[in-house]
Length: 124
Image 1 (cartoon, rainbow, N blue to C red):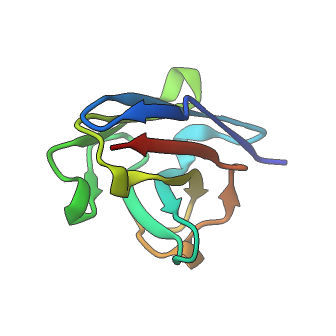
Image 2 (image 1 turned 180 degrees about the vertical axis):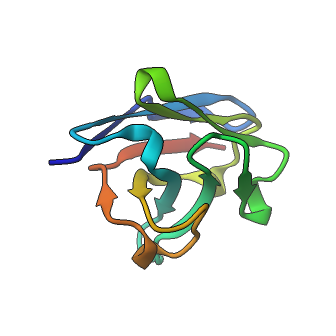
Image 3 (image 1 turned 30 degrees about the vertical axis):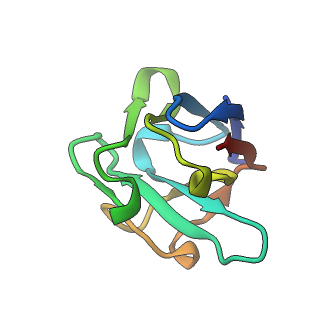
């Protein structure tokens, strides 16, 4: 059974940084394209960043380009999201997700496995 566990969320002031981690177990990590999503209260879940199996392909939603970086360490079964220059509008629960069907994917429905989420709160 594939399990994903996120960590690294917290409360930070605007302009600060956080690094989220997601450890995957129960499957072959290098077979999964990975994604980070976020969901703010009253809003739909939004794809923030995606990375291919090897890490050679990444993409981002426009609102985080230049501020967030997705990366992965296949030897450690871990995907990261480095978040810099955080803004209050980045406040949300952040989820990592895994999928084995596509090189990279942006749709919630493309992902097969999900973590439980970690709260990120950015104060102004």
